[in-house]
Length: 78
Image 1: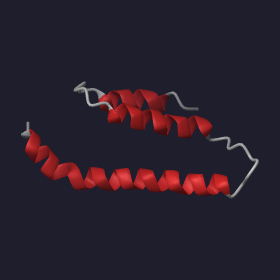
Image 2 (image 1 turned 120 degrees about the horizontal axis):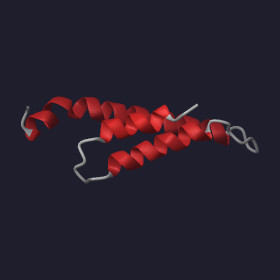
Image 3 (image 1 turned 90 degrees about the horizontal axis):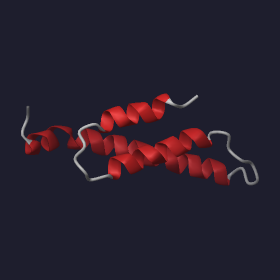
Image 4 (image 1 turned 90 degrees about the vertical axis):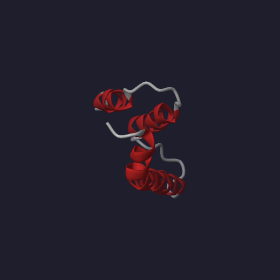
């Protein structure tokens, strides 16, 4: 097992990149919704699951099962 500092050194840039990708996806989605006023998007379940996942990841408690919880969250989608 790697020390905590080494884990951050090795994976920080990859995680930052993935978070920026998520932010870009949400920005594109918001712009698309604004471009179609009056239409209710049918993808709200998927969007809700993304926000639930972000909330789960924002928890600072050390649970050691974030990956499993995310897999369970996304496995419930149609």
